[in-house]
Length: 374
Image (tube, rainbow, N blue to C red; front, side, top):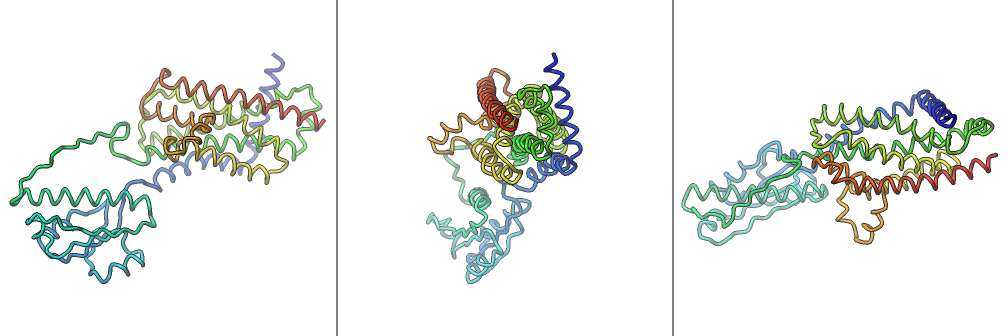
């Protein structure tokens, strides 16, 4: 009972210390509000407002029909340029796409000669260029098919491909990036707050004050765990309801309480990682460098930025032991697919096991550090 009271009061001390640090508080608030909103709305994997030009060497009804098939918001109003302007325009970055229609294009199509269309792409915007090329190909093929259906070519396609998108019917990027943003902020902020608290105790000399009290290393560490986890949990809840679900209109298909249970398990690992980094670092500068090396790697290998399946096979085996990978996996199952406990318990178990093992090791290292200080 006395140990629980010590942990409670030490945690309250941590909350007061964090509350007095206005820079850190502003950083936490922005990270879970403005940063997530900007990440969700400022970047997009869809083609949006792409500049396009046509070199029309056919000047036929079909070529005019093809140019009219491109319009906002996916593309800007098509511009007509000459063949001599293409290279200069692409070098200057005026157009992302340039479609060149050859002479006698419509006549050759009617005669069954299968003429070629040249598509020049500015691939410096690699993602937009790759997706936009597919858009342009589909638009041109569909418009040509409807054009000839209205005239003398009534041929039908051999198959009718019906595409049904599950979990994100409109392919809205913000549905994905906003949740990934929360996941990344949970990882980064938890490690930063916990590790900074350990280093701050050492730099301000308050760690020595704690050592003369009848406190154990477990009580000091657990106080930092529950206090910083509470701050991150409240910030995550506010971000989920106010930014993701209200402002961005991202639906939550599964159980909110189940997802927050998984967040609590992950916070146990993240706070243990923060204690570990705060223990081995001797200054905030060292801690900041380790954050770049450790947290950024956790985020990149978690499967939030790129699918785990796209990683090399040997790396997939290694990332299996990263709780961040399982955090992303069960978040996607619960939030997007509406999965229940039966679908996510393996990820929950893995996060809990790795978190417990890492906390035990971090506590042992922290205890040794305190013994050296004494």
